[in-house]
Image (cartoon, rainbow, N blue to C red; front, side, top):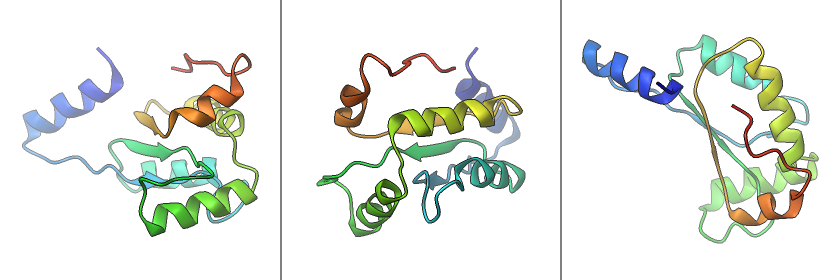
Length: 117
């Protein structure tokens, strides 16, 4: 059973709702992603959604557009984000969901690992 299903099965059995915060990696500071993930887990997040920044986020609102712009200026790439996820994953089984446009993923092929578990 995958991590997300386990969380939702447990929450359903307990009659609870999920806390699923969204972050833009490397926002507001370069190098903050792993510590932010750890703090969100410590604070009770059930799942964390990680938004992959994109230079032309036309479908996003002003807040995500701004955080994506800052994150890109701070050096966020698919590769640096996956590196942060792998580092976080070494000590956590908390479900993480990557969300984003296909363009950044296409730009990192063939160097982009698709199965990071």
